[in-house]
Length: 449
Ligand SMILES: Cc1cc2nc3c(=O)[nH]c(=O)nc-3n(C[C@H](O)[C@H](O)[C@H](O)COP(=O)(O)OP(=O)(O)OC[C@H]3O[C@@H](n4cnc5c(N)ncnc54)[C@H](O)[C@@H]3O)c2cc1C
Image (tube, rainbow, N blue to C red; front, side, top):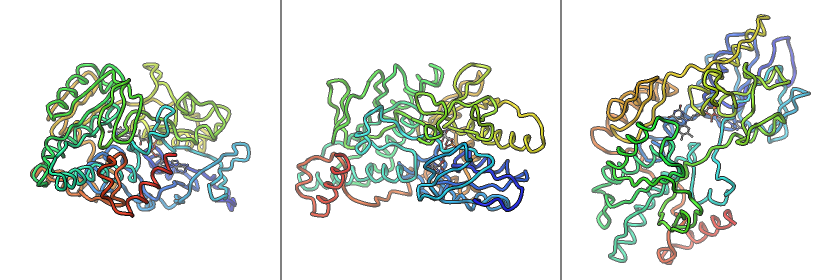
């Protein structure tokens, strides 16, 4: 990549998420030498991360090795590496290990991450859901909360309910809260002898006046009713003012939280600001209608990292997988037009509808003017998610897992991996912990400090 041995233009794609993979697949049709660089060796199907977090699916069923996904394109190579800097004048990208990659065309598709609204100290206690590592950590905490409650009840003879607090009533918060309710009331119901998981309290906190604010009000209402039927307590206009060990504050009110999950804020990948071009408040790069960066027609930014308004509605295009896929495809297609000396075309998003799941047989969907909720919306959601899942093997495995789980209420990936320390589990319980656990707590405290 660093030496141009022939005259084939070099395309560097940063990120093998939804946008990067689509860009690579389209670009592979042209006479380009393409390199896809990602800091992970796998593509993650983020819409199903909540299933890993709630022990329904295993990480390998929702992730696919990038090398394997792109193997059929002979002009595409894959590199594992974390991009750290840009030199747009020299057409050079710097990796964290100090090496450089040169390009003729660049597509930046590094996505988004969590935002704690200036309270990064909350992150250790309230984990967000973005990567496979986040999902397995959430799974660890959720399952551990039940185990610790059982042990406490075994020792003391007194059973306290487990409390989950989910912060943020967007699609991720809603699916996490709904599925946790299902796990507690069904999958774990008869697995413990001293506690009754059906007494678990699940609280969904939303700062705005309604959950799922990106959906029409009737679907928000329906989603809230479906959640409440599953046993989730929904509180709207509830701004979180503090996340502390074992509790969450809303104003002056203190709410118990055995485990707190963060689904409230998103900010763009830090690479947006590192490009040295104009970004919005969330760090998204403001792109031209053809998805290139103003002043640098050879550099494109796509997916969650791009800020582009829909010319029809004037609204910012949402951070959704279909937007990212269509943008990735379009940027590569425009490069293809450059190579054929044709004029570039502006990007137009084709909205095929949006949907959110709430739990077993519960979902909402909006397709144009059509609003659907309940079982039919859930079937539509299942179909779309299996269809778009990367990898044929994964599609078959997920279909089997869901069929099994639907029939038996069981969740097959109930594994606690890593430490048995739960942030915020109260001091009395810790008295009985082993030395190893104290070390773990000290490490976590040091990370928080
Ligand atoms: C929990 C969750 C649920 C979601 N559910 C839905 C849903 O149901 N429907 C829907 O349409 N959308 C959903 N989304 C949103 C959707 O996943 C995103 O819009 C989409 O992933 C954006 O694609 P992208 O390619 O821009 O970024 P991503 O898919 O996030 O990919 C970014 C890639 O860049 C890599 N990367 C980042 N930084 C660097 C770096 N410095 N160097 C090298 N590589 C880097 C990452 O490893 C990653 O592979 C969900 C998102 C989340 C987090």
